[in-house]
Length: 477
Image 1 (cartoon, rainbow, N blue to C red):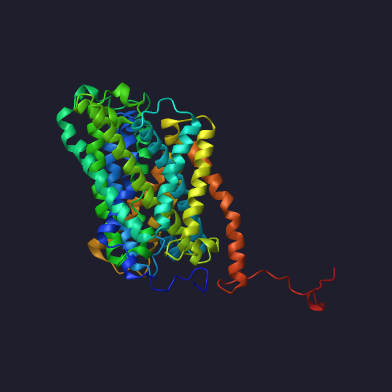
Image 2 (cartoon, rainbow, N blue to C red):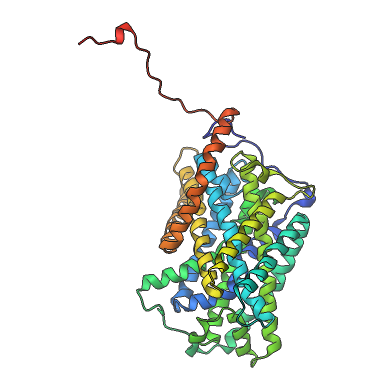
């Protein structure tokens, strides 16, 4: 722990036993598996509502996401203890309060994102088993299965989590690649909607596509969040982030555009399981193949939730070890996993699903609501990470010069502008609710800081004291 509020952490990055570490392939699979969840199976329907401009928006956000991945790699290389990723970067540069704010934001992102993933997953489970017009209680029951199976896998240990993650990445990547390549031979240009299908301004169409597109890329930072589980993190965090993001971006562009050309626009924008319709177009309405793609989406969602379940516990664990989260989050089970964080995050996500379905909403409406809540809360940690890198680059501490400095300043500046744009495009309701959630967490920081002061872990602020009244200070009128 640090001894002063603004002092950087000096400890070397703690590492579990070698057999429990994620190598570059598993770290890349963690990033790719966390990015590519069931969101990609729902995204074409939402993107089609914005028009074909959404494809260009997706390309632009892919470039920004890769830049973020490269920046996270740079931060992981120079920060002594980068366990916790975006949290560690903000705390190292700006102190405990920035670290706590970032950790709080990202923890909300993680469990709200899990709820969004599982809301999309529910639609494909219903398609797989032929459940028509399900009630809110049916949706909720399926969602609980999707949230708690990954939780139990993670509770079994990091090896089980890594093995399952690698398996699900392979199972979902190959069929998606098949649609993204072979599907183009069946595309009908008449199926594409207008360039701007919103009926509003061009900027409103871009904003409509941007929120869902960014949600699809949340996970680029996962290797950094789980740095304490990654072998040689100073080398592998950056590589895994960039490799995983590039693969996901290429897949997204190919697949989304292909599905938009396979399914008629009017049908696509109202379809919660558009890949089923896409396969029906490619293979003459085969029921077997429709069930197959629904099964792939179900596997994909479980894989994404598997990785995200680890992430929902890893960042609070790092913050708790620094005294900036409830100490129970820092504890580990005998299997070496943060069991308290895993279970607590699953419970909170379950409550959010109950709230979402409790209003009677289902399908894409619930998915869109949860997407924008996740997007706003993740944009803040991205923003602080970019500010941390910018602060370093304009300080006397920096060690990069010339072309490298220009490159790094460009990446940091792009990341800052990207984070601001994403926040602005998420809509008033999402920003309002995210701010309320974050403000609710602020009083906890007051108690945590006071506790650290009592224990001598941070310096106490110097208070103003009235000088004593003496004969010399008394003025006689």
